Length: 120
Image (tube, one colour):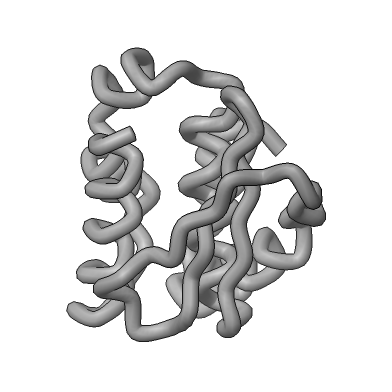
């Protein structure tokens, strides 16, 4: 799914619990990581998170279903974009638009992923 499709879908859901369930469902859509991908573990996340890259295509994995969903959302924002294009994005602003009720530890993990992309 594209980020626009994800945003539109989440904006249709008013119930916070249903929104989080949708995020978890998004985690099931992560593409397999190719063998030739360059991968980095994201530090600062409560869960194990790995972001991988082949050219401008991004892949990810996490050991928590909720975090896999967050990774899927993040990857939908950056997939196919160059490092310069990604640096111009307001990734945290976009996450805030989604109006997801994440706790402090999840927000720290999101910020860690954003920092990774800002430093490509």
